[in-house]
Image (cartoon, rainbow, N blue to C red; front, side, top):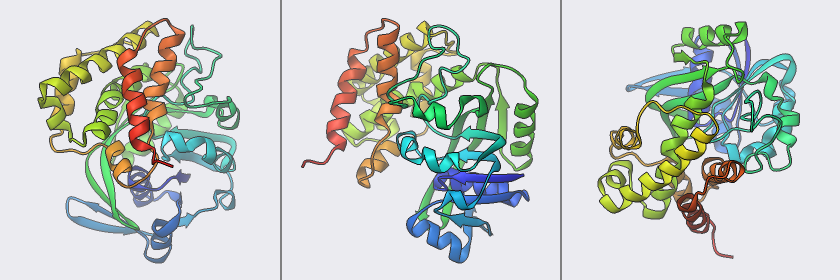
Length: 322
């Protein structure tokens, strides 16, 4: 299959390496030193101490690649509005879009039923142009459970997880969903398909909406936050607000909030990606994680004072003084 991975950083680079290793025609869209290293030496995947070098086409000009059968979107959600025109250049008549991102995605209202159907979420798609450029009808919903990093340009180090949850926005068991699940599974990735992909999005977001911004505010890793009684109470309050919004929109949760906190706690001395971004001086994805939930809450009459406070403090913490 002809595949482009747009944003071949840690997760994107891992997926690109697995797909290329399975024999697919993979192109990686990247930039800077990471791009230069992939062009010069290939993409190195380190997994359990074993390094494999994959040769694949790498570029910072997506329009050079032409239409693809599959486009994996692995840029962070806050960067998507700027990236959308380049991603659109990869779309042909039958292109499938697979967003490997955190937070509430731009396609979320598509085929969602009332009260979301026909709307757009300003926190992730401010003017509705994302849904116009990247048609939600092309999307297979995706939730990522894997951990990887880029310790140096051209080098992806895999830590664990290795699973994706996939689902059609309308809940159907479509032929294209089956084909994509089979392709990814044959590439060595653990795949689960679901008729309720939005529930899977909410379940992942449920932890991220609280742990990620609080890690920025405290500088703490997962276990320390969960073990501190005061911080745990803040985590719990924020997550309960998120759960109330989600349930008002029809989501179902398969565990209670304390079990979800314990799931996150078991990651141990794990530093969230948002804290890593702040420490590196990179923009953070606060709007897809927190802003979108606040916006959705207003739409269904659910107050979110804890999330609003956390969001405001985190935005200030992550914004350099002028």
